[in-house]
Image 1 (tube, each protein chain N blue to C red):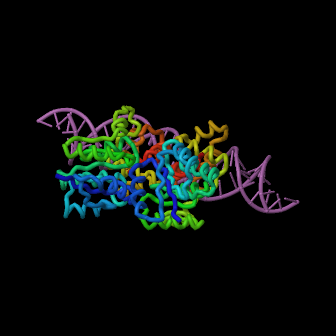
Image 2 (cartoon, rainbow over the protein chains, first blue to last red):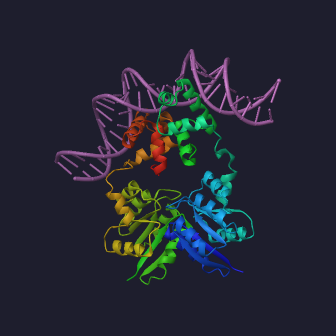
Image 3 (cartoon, each protein chain N blue to C red):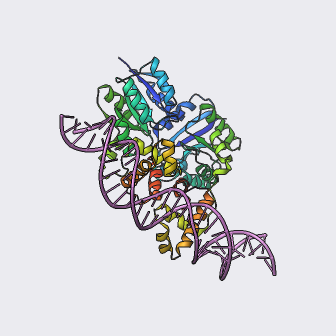
Length: 205
Length: 205
DNA sequence: AAAAATATCATCTTTTTGGATGATTGATTT
DNA sequence: AAATCAATCATCCAAAAAGATGATATTTTT
């Protein structure tokens, strides 16, 4: 019994790469590819693969959202997240959205085949780097309150404490308190590193 | 007369993709690949391809710097920049570093072959998106110098002026000057907004 | 060869940050 | 009911950032 695979990725070279890697495998059947979320959903109306390689960044919709839709519509399909970045938040997001595994685009042939085998056996598969990244508890995105989120958003947009105070109708010391708790929660030394991790993890949304 | 091509990219799938795309071409000869800058330079000591596909983001060194080195050591080799991003500043940087062309990783087989053909005829080749991006006169992302890039990277990691000065063996006023020119070039009011746009555009790579 | 850009250093001043510490009120959770 | 958390405010203070301005030596570009 062979496994039907499909890929959604807007990078032709990656599509071609995976196709080339898998084409010699006897028990793997290449169903095709899509370059965006909508054409992927169209394809799925007609054919349902066993495994979809899904890029996180697609032109029309994020891979995260597409993943949620596919899981809802076709619960049997196994999804393997695919990305160049080893961002903890991304891995968490795609796995929480119902993906069965995560691979980086520098994955080897062995990793690809292992991943397919694992998810077909109803197991989760995370590439080494992703596993490592998830186990790194230091990188956990802190839980911040609603108010802190507002302040963080304003900080990221370049507003100073006096401006934030004015905008949110609070006193300067209060604005400063929020700023300081954000720094503490994120374990950031200053706004620069705070903004960097916040932007990378989209913590202010 | 066949063209010898080589690729430097840390993503196995992309390497495999290009190899697969080019393998059926009779007048193209695949010399191999490297996954980082140092092994690329090692390879070049022994064999010199006609064309190198060079990824912008490599693990050990930026593709920009590697490009400069290769151009200096082997002026006859044609370099085609390769990246997932269609960032104006990146395209400008790689072309200024001596590359003969620029391709996105979603390039088609035709674009790849056209690019090889063009650079072998001593012409420049820019993929459609790159050309379009360059013609966009609104400089979304400012052009910053190498030194400024270093400083920007350190700022984003949360280093203060005194720390940056120490790390780069420059005086505090100098570190501060770089910081201020970065703020001016980015039109940013403070580090927060500077870091935000820098991270969003990966300007420090 | 001249002009422009880069990288360096300097001084001075005001504003902003961020650390330390503590307190009050109201809402939520246990 | 007690404990915890959220949001607010306060003071003190040192460090850092950022604005204004100017200068010099070295590359790079024109």
